[in-house]
Length: 229
Image (tube, rainbow, N blue to C red; front, side, top):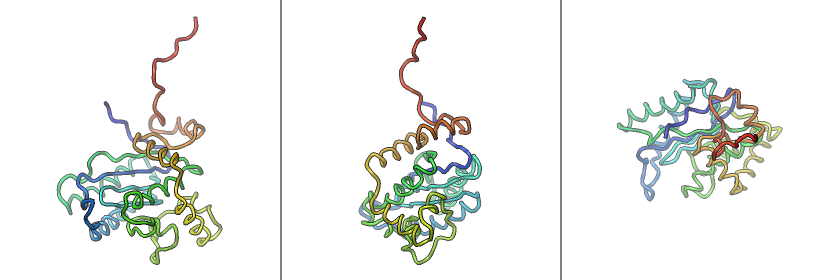
């Protein structure tokens, strides 16, 4: 089966996930803090180098997940490639298990759920009990529990508009993060990401159809209907 071309639409955020060819640590081993710290440094450098606005991230032992808006069609790919080159020089050998997966995310409806989904990954993968306690994600930044602000993060307007002051935004987001997503929301995020189709409403898909680099949703199954005659 031919692989899908990269999905891109101007000014639309993307949820991105790249899995490592070899996990940084085994399921029962401690997470390698030094390697994760270095990965985070490389992520900052690569995002700056390729002018990608990163809204949120989660680094765990077997994958990298980002919510970001690239300025052009190839910038996100170049960011992931740059990260892979830096990591390959450190670890040697193949870095990623496969091509990264991505989905367009509808602003105003799915950006905050996508952010909550990625920042909750360390909890769902049983690394920590609370998302803010994982040092290698943007959760502590968004909830205001990190004493060292991540100045390189580019807040998406959906997060910015969730409160009138930084304290309000952090408190509101903390409530959202602690409440988590509905199962149906989690499933929709994952289906869109792993299928590499757009995450959004029917009206969003219709609006972006002419602007996107390819089809936003899978074609209807079955034979086309015959016209009456």
